[in-house]
Image (cartoon, rainbow, N blue to C red; front, side, top):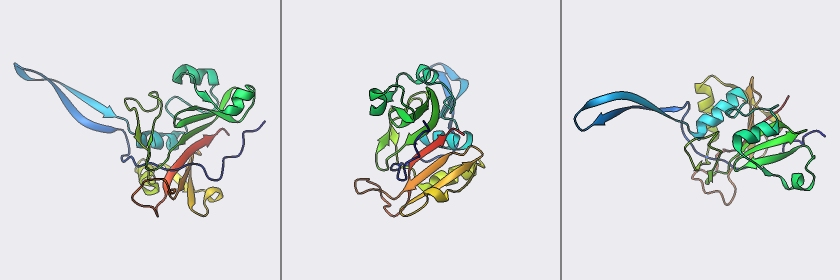
Length: 206
């Protein structure tokens, strides 16, 4: 069975600034009796880094379309199966979820990768994807994501199939990752209610 078509209205956005992994500079190792002994550097990975890398490469860390579910669960731990999978374990086209990360499974293989966000709230992604962060702001403005993509020369076009009404969408190249943006819902606590926020970013297998 083919995976079901992506829903026309998909989620609701998040605001995390930055482009590439943030280098916060040297940290000097010192003692009480002398000058700094080493120059270590710490790199902080942000949600925006994860989104940009996904849009650019089509991968979420080591996760990619075509990998067996068993390998994904070895990396992530057991996922939360969709209720349809609980009823019919052999059914295709439904996701396993790890908080804001979803992997759609077809014939026991990952066929789609999804990150879902809701603006004005927080999101949690597995440590494999976003290390050292229990939760992150889930508010990503459309213009912030596009500026971050442009900063790393990730090409993108308007996705006309999912751009209508109060939502808009882009498709990245060559990874073919789709990002869908929405105006905030009534219960989404964001400062700019007329602007578009990222609700979901996803990739289907070819």
